[in-house]
Amino acid sequence: MELETPTTFRDRPININESGQRKWIYAKQPQGKWYNRRTAAGWLAILFLVLAPFIKINGNPLMLFDIANRKFSIFGQIIWAQDTYLLALVMAVTVVFIVLFTVVYGRLWCGWACPQTVFLEMVFRRIEYLFEGNYRKGRKEQKMTTRIFFLKTAKHAVFLIVSVLITNIFLNWIIGPERLFEIITAPIQENLMGFTIMFGISLFYYWIYAFFREQVCTMICPYGRLQGVLLDSRSIAVIYDYKRGEPRGSKNAGDCIDCHQCIAVCPTGIDIKNGSQLECINCTACIDECNIVMKKVNKAPNLIRFDSVQGVESGRRSILNARTYAYSAVLAILIVVLAVTISNRKPIDATMLRVSGSIFQRVDSVTYSNLYMVKIINKTQADKVLTIKVITPLSGKAQLATGQTMLKKQGILESVMIVNLNQSTLTGKSTPIELGIFEGETLLEKYTTNFLGPEK
Ligand code: SF4
Ligand code: SF4
Image (spheres, rainbow, N blue to C red):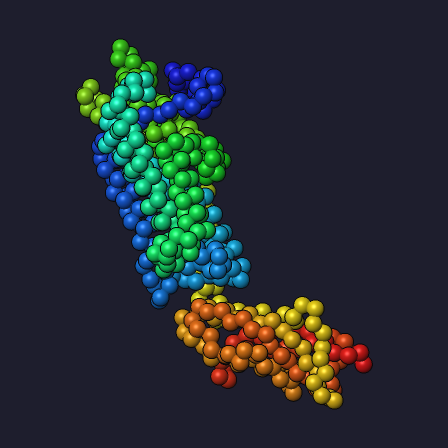
């Protein structure tokens, strides 16, 4: 069915006017069952963002992306940067999950769980309603009175405070609550750099939520740009039932009375009657608003609803198709592989590299030594007492310079190591040797490197 809508909406972003200037969107506050559900989901998402770094599983945070120490805690499982294959697997699972989820449910994530939308719609927009009232047509043309000036100033002051709080939530995920507490409680001059970064991030968040707003979703977010390739006519999205609604207008036969209330409530300012658009974040505000209108004009609800294009065309919902099954199978396999790989990964990770620029040293008439830099990571939840032995050649001896062999759980040991070999075991200028890291008599890891000696 042909829609009776202009196509000018495709000429430029909805929040940009003819002369290229920003058109500010004053979205009306939604009300209705979908908004209530979204509010509950939004606050659950905020609760998760706030609490995840504090919740511990086996002593590890539920979520922590400790980039400085190249250590990630995902659902209590520590993954080190050295676990490259694991990180690659986690990323592959994440990408497939996102693709699968989007194919089936469209942009549901954006409107319901994405931190950008959740904070903007559940926190900042509500603060704005509190200070400036709900949507009023032409609010932007309001004259600046002393009262409005003070209300706007107060609103921005609260925005700034909330931005600082969001920065702390973000930093909790990056450096952990303990380190953040240290920075906050230390005198500013001791942590000038930390405070400057914190202030900078807070200002950035303030700018995003106070001014940039929906443009993150419509212009910047790469996930939003992917919609065009991921969605098909069977994907679930917020959709206007054009078969039922058209031709629109109060005197026409369709159910849509062209009241524009679905546009007034839209946080990205679009008209859902133009069909699925990249700017739609599936927030469902237009569903609620249209249902209110439908009730007033005594018509059936859900003229705008969660459905697929195919569902609207055929009158039957259809979310399962060959692509969905294929993605589900790949996702299930990846999750199993990920779980097995994590449970079977090595308890320690070691690198032993010859000290740069060093050659061999003669210890006595028959013994030569080489210096190595050793780094051992204990990936387990138990302290370990380790010894390093030369496995081949058998007569070789290894000794850590620090003498330290105790490695705390999730700890890192870095030390210089001296390896002594008998001249008779050297095969030339460079002899391959095999080192073993033992806990008691148990071999935890083998490491192969070279030993330099004199020419034979
Ligand atoms: S709110 Fe409903 S009736 Fe009003 S214009 Fe939008 S789709 Fe039509
Ligand atoms: S079109 Fe509807 S669902 Fe999409 S962003 Fe606007 S209000 Fe939300």
